[in-house]
Amino acid sequence: MQQRRRVKQTSPLDQRLTDQAERLRKEARGTPPGIERERLLRRARQAETAADIEQWLTCPGLRTPS
Image (cartoon, rainbow, N blue to C red):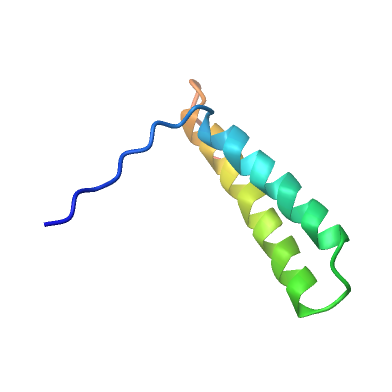
């Protein structure tokens, strides 16, 4: 049976997602227009959305989004 690798994260999830979105946007700026660039921008938007959702879920006064 394989053992799971455990990784101790040093930064919060929302920060890692924000950093990933910035990295992807920077990479997209250096990519010529086309499918690859659009894929990078889509992944950046998804990371930003995930960071927003994570912040919403962890806030102390949890409310439904309006």
